[in-house]
Image 1 (tube, helix red, strand yellow):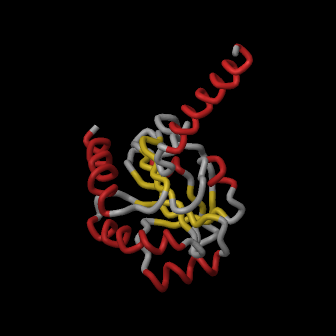
Image 2 (cartoon, one colour):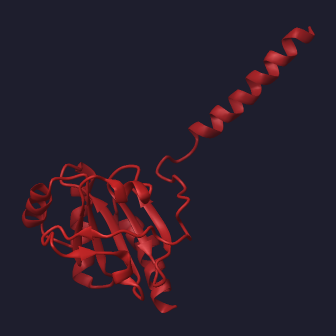
Length: 175
């Protein structure tokens, strides 16, 4: 009888962990970077590779960093929402063209429109790695001191924009 109790207890414990794991929302992957200083970098601008951008250029401003790529289907889905947001001129958006060919990124923005205040090229993906990018698209809200306050994994939607991103941006801008 005792030799069956230990395997049964192990089975129950593993079942509980499996049940909890399957019930989690995979789009809500916690980021260890939230509430920490955004990683620093210097990258070339997509349209003007001889000009550089660093997050330090945005000190004193609340801004969005949107990680995208020309080969990303979900990025195409969120693009019209970003275009509408850019027309409202609420918050500067920096586009990070991730693991992409420069000419492909430029062609995408020319065809679909450019919602970004500026776009930078992360051709080798090193900056994306430093930011903990799981895949594209991802969007970060960065405060006036250069601290990441929110990370969205997946496409910006009207719902997460109006319910989460914009209220946070307005709160941070008021500080």
